[in-house]
Length: 263
Image (tube, rainbow, N blue to C red; front, side, top):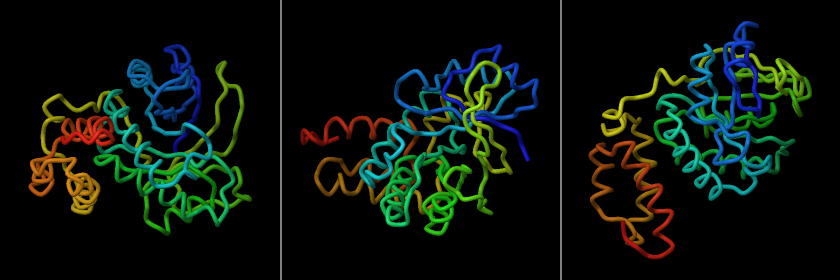
């Protein structure tokens, strides 16, 4: 078992050192587009130099997953770009938050959101943060592979598949507001010492076959609508698409598809 915490406040050198001296080994921080709580590359370097691992969590609003598949695709694409920008290495995890007391009736929509976010973040493991019910349901449906359970809304139950468990909220420690967590392995955490070299960004991605199939399906819709040239589809067939090229496609398609411009 490993000791950790999550917080909205960016960490300084001094605060990171204080937590490390208290035997904390990881911190979960927000992988979000903007705002005071967003993790930056500079902060990631500070955390790494201070001896902590980083867990990335994407959350804009608590009930965002209720917007379903389209929101998941958009948020996944955003998370992918942010992860690359701050130096989060492929092979680590991005957790997507379900930060409310979700009902059974809402699980289909939540699963659609998480599955779509996974589609949009190839090269990264996809995780979900949520209650016992959310963790169990997403595990059963197979929409992600990493699980961060909160004690909130869980009625004292603990999922057997949890990788991280949040057991206390809203305490002040080392001058900042934090939640306390413990982890049990395969968290998907990372640090900036693992940043891939530039050349690796331009090497063919190492994906499982189901991930290549998913990419083909998602981008195939744009190809069938005459918004994407076959050159890009061929790269997927040949498994030669690079991370740099995928980021380019995510960025350009968002801006051009609505205007009918072929990529």
